[in-house]
Length: 585
Image (cartoon, rainbow, N blue to C red; front, side, top):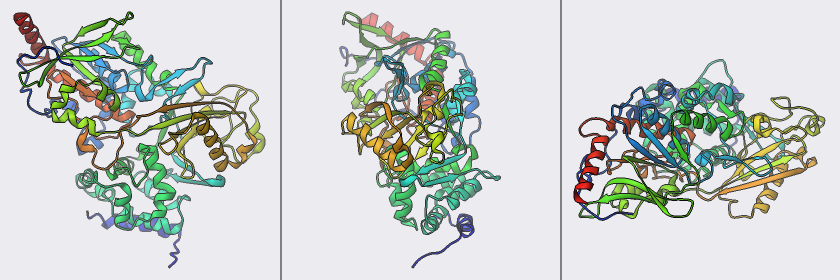
């Protein structure tokens, strides 16, 4: 039976269903003292700061940005010597807070640049190369606070139109247009009701499913809705969506692109919790679905201000310095009891032991698996990390001799004369999605981030991220496929030529947010009293993302600061261990 509905009827269906349908490597072993029992599993959060980042209240906490902007608000009485493994976003944020709390910080990064998965660098010809496409959702409250703290928020972010645009084969455009006089949730409801991306029948089924979702319950009973979302980590988004009214058409023509953009997985593979977490934020915060992009590259717009902040506080960052081992003590059962330092190699390849009172491993999933000593896996919490795996991606950059996303004016499409920076060039200045390509999200960085990517006399710089469907192909084949698929969705671009290309493959990027993975994410404090973790894969209530990394950095800093002082604190523990080591030497 064909369902025939008007746009007004669809909007009414969304509002009405939403109104009522919300049902539901070790040194010689020796026994040493410990800050608390070393056989215990991970302690609960100690600091108020870390507690504020988790739980239902964290989604409504308007003070998170202020906390990130203002710093920890405490200077410890005791000064710790802290080593941080990894200079990605999580490690740098942790270093900011710990330096402000009065501690001596030294960082160690394997790569020749900072940033982790948000890295960018210059090639030999002066092109800015990235390891992914980095978009800032309006709900990145903690990251925005950090950028305000370092002076980069107002100058280095460019806000985009409140529209999420889908580009389909033949140049057909669909959109989720959130621009509306009334904010969330009405702005979101009307965006889904009016989108051209779905046909009327799929929009009706979409409305029915969203109307019976935890998101709608949360509008009336936030805790109840959020608890329902947390319980959905063991099923895929497709399983959840099709349980009560959702149809395949909505998945194929809209939700898959969003799933790939969030976690590089399709709806059949990604956890329902992952997808509904971000939608929950969209539903309760009007600004959450607003997109921003950097003025230029991540190095220029995000990392350089943080590096300046750290250098002003005497934080030492060692680039190109991989950690070979974490030096630690064990008890008579081989259980690690404390960390003492890290081993690196000097320029002459001799091993160097660097001792610290406290160590933070601020790594991604492959990094932490590589750096953890085997004995650490005797703790269940740390062993669970090895149950996490990651998705591969390939980031493609293509330069053209015209403006790829300009489909209405051929003369403007080929016009690259003069200075067309800062919004003067033709095309779509926003993040773009597509369900008809193997890159689910992409953008013309010469338009969205012209500071480092626009070049006078040249056109578009398309940056697209391929997922594992294309990862195994050669770089040349990926470039060829990317150009072809761009031509398919922007037919007029066939008249343009690709003048330069780059492919960066990352075999292990985000952790794979498939069902059942949330329980394997470790907290920042570990059973080893002076060893901590950070990174977007660690436990926090957001996704594996820039915001998740920022949250984890703030949380681990709060946990260290809360434990630093006092007769049973980290400093007293370190001094006691050193005294015992001297006595038993």
